[in-house]
Amino acid sequence: MAKEKTVYTCSECGATSARWLGKCPGCEGWNTLVESVAEATGSTSRNRLASASHVGLAPSQPVLPLSQIEAVDVARHPTGQEELDRVLGGGLVDGGVVLIGGDPGIGKSTLLLQAVDALQRHGHDTLYVSGEESGAQVALRARRLGLVGSQVPVLAEIQLEKILATLAQRQPRVVIIDSIQTLYSAELSSAPGSVAQVRECAAHLTRMAKLTGIAVVLVGHVTKEGALAGPRVLEHMVDTVLYFEGDTHSSFRLIRAIKNRFGAVNEIGVFAMTEKGLRGVSNPSAIFLSQHSEPVPGSCVLVTLEGTRPLLVEVQALVDTGGPSPRRLSVGLERDRLAMLLAVLHRHAGVACLDQDVFVNAVGGVRISEPAADLAVLLAIQSSLRGKPLPRGFMAFGEVGLAGEVRPAPRGQERLREAAKLGFAHAIIPSANAPKKPIAGMTVHAIERVEEAIALVRGL
Image 1 (cartoon, rainbow, N blue to C red):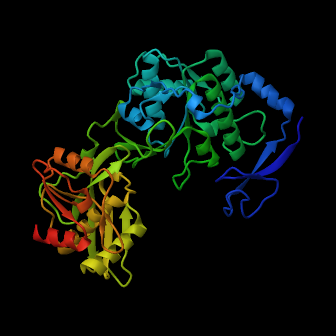
Image 2 (image 1 turned 90 degrees about the vertical axis):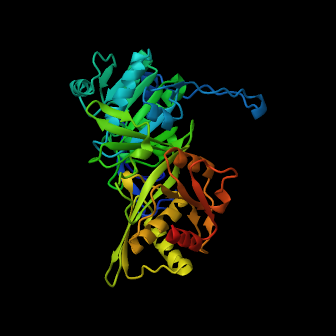
Image 3 (image 1 turned 30 degrees about the vertical axis):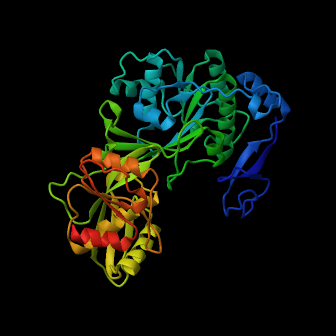
């Protein structure tokens, strides 16, 4: 029997060390090394694992210049969920490895069971590997989702070698691993879910996918901070990384592509949780817009860009009398950027919030990271401070610089067309995004500085 040894693996970059160090030798992060007990497997055990699973590296190819290598488009398999296919870039790819993470109970297993059932009904051989639930529990969920007569094969197993042997025997087109943290390899003595086990199991499944062309979907747990549990090297090994977002107390869910070798990143899919599972939302802008009977102070609509999709999101601000240490709180937006915008508003537009508490929220639980939200945030704050609502059908977008200038946002014409399609009649945008031709039913105000925007809304 091989001897056991203690190794320390970095949870960020996956670097290993024979002894504990305060600073990782790879990524130089502090206190990131995690202790694990690994078996010193030799070449014999490695060969035994490879032969049992029929997994190895793909045969090497001759070195050729790029001009002589034939580039072919990858074939995609739609999952039956339009919003999921949008995030994936059109569907699953043969040999592609997808990692999907999210909070417990947010709907990862529900969505994947619906997708794999649709694939099976369209003639694709599939396999659902459940490491957290028994086959009876998976069948009970399928019954709740209305998947009557589902023919999806289910394997309740957590040992990697048995799973790989089953895949080699059945050769499915798509396999779901729910979840990667529950698997373990008999070649390692550490517990399932440890850094060594997660990295080793994911590496073997990835090599198997590339060799056989099986599309693999891995379900990953997340930490308290919302990041995927396990080593960061796990995200580097896979082709696509998807995150489930949204409040578990809300019926709406968002899937965001953080990494995608076969499609656009930061693409989002919007779902609604129903009694029959997750259903795609055809008009997601309606989720992020509050239905006020009359315009209210502190509300401004922003047209943000999520991947290739323009979305209308309502930004709400509340300015209230604060104490000696006024608070700045933002939900769905960067807090540090809020403090910077308040300083720009004071310095260049003469609007002071020094003794005021400022709260900013993006409606619907969406997270906005692009700077094009700056102008809408400032106008919402100005509206709340004055106690005067912006006119009905008003929207804005644009990045605000420290010098008070309003910078253009990418794909401004698409944003304007999306707002006009939904009936918005007034827009304040950067002058560089001004349309060359008038937009029917919309009055566009092109500005260059933040004080111009403040003056405009005061006159509306």
